[in-house]
Length: 158
Image (cartoon, rainbow, N blue to C red; front, side, top):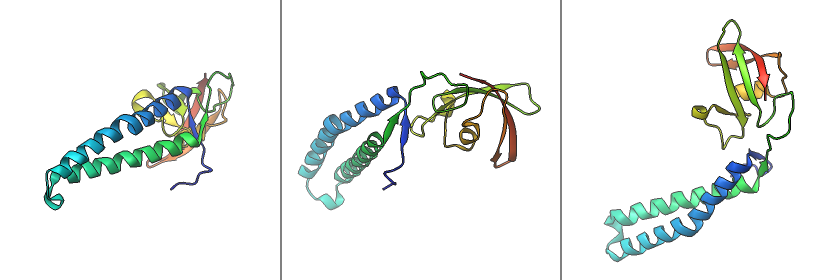
């Protein structure tokens, strides 16, 4: 169990999505798994019953996910990116440029549950996210990577 004082920062959309997933797991999926277990039990010898073992494993995975979601939602703090700020914070869309390069990269700072590199959403707790927090347009910053220290500049903050 993680420390319950840890806040989980979420957008309202992600909070609602997780709440819906939790509700689905508790109402629909739990019932389906219970029915699968009942059916598998009716097949006889449980020690050599693959259907029963599979249903038990699925039940365990669902219960773990329910516990995780309940913990995340209980510790969630909704972050609104409606507040305009000129410094990087949760929900900010930040364009950065690596020193010595022309290309820029745009990222959105999100909580760890929402992080998704395919959508260019990075956790504020990641090395890059942490290094950008509190910076303003024009600020330079660096952070450690497996390839050594990287130097970047904040091009814009939305």
